[in-house]
Length: 428
Ligand code: GUN
Ligand code: ZN
Image 1 (cartoon, rainbow, N blue to C red):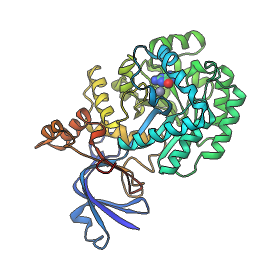
Image 2 (image 1 turned 45 degrees about the vertical axis):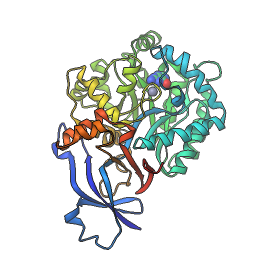
Image 3 (image 1 turned 90 degrees about the vertical axis):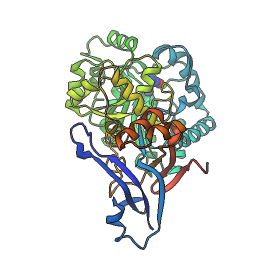
Image 4 (image 1 turned 90 degrees about the horizontal axis):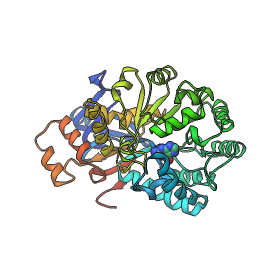
């Protein structure tokens, strides 16, 4: 079936820092969709003649590609806003107890459903997701994502050094990962990521196994954490004195590849950046989490100097919002603390095509170009009285920036998956 939407359209296909032509904007555009895919996009006046006999729906807002959350933990949904600690103590006190409950499949099902609905409510249509160590926590997430037709990548957390009740073994971790890859990878819009929690949570044997899993399945992703917190970095240096830096720990086990996604990267020596660039591995930048846990601020200028591949993540539950729109505003604030004024179009790129490319799904989503899946969000520049006031009579860049700084789930008016409305603020 062919149908179309008439709306203001905006997308950023490449990092606009290097290439201002990367910004594509149709103030009055037409988006034509067939079987869930975009088949044409352009100015309404130019395209409407060619598609005069198909149904056209007018969308009352700014249409951008669906957001791609490059790093988020679904089992931490119920521990968002947990007071008191930085990373390692926060994990012990708040997170590990909550994750233990995912041994119960029914609990995992309930949280997965809420989590995915919350993503849609915030305009997020694709995500790279941490579940827990439990195999059934992955089943719960993938089953719920399949039912909604969302593009979700995930994989059982490997953590044989985890606390009692939340640990696996190299053998059980390997077997469960293999079974899950067979069961889920490539099914519908789902993909698998080999997911060691972080260097401190796995034995050398398990890290080596993760490398072997990756080598055996070259089309899955690798997803972990890197250099988030100073105490964490010191503990890694102490345990792995032979490693040149934190990244080198992963490198020695074959975990640094073009398909590797590292969350955070707050404390990175230049050597790490060189190696990331050389290998094509990338970083999921998570400013909301970094503020909340007091981890620090991502250095966008350093990343740019080294040509790093970047995406944007909420990292809920260390992150305090599911909104990748709001997270773009937080990225601006993190960059400001390092004396860089992040361009609003670059922030939008990070949350859409940047994240999609980082997750190797950029050929499918993130750009809203012909050939891509029609996942998009309709943003309301008048979602609140303040936003309405701040965005009247301003240009596109200022409207977008105001949305990023002042907006959140309230500004996600509707979310579309494959051209079908999956969330409508006015008909919840
Ligand atoms: N490092 C290891 N595990 C975690 C986690 O659950 N959240 C964050 N933010 N960092 C981690
Ligand atoms: Zn995380």
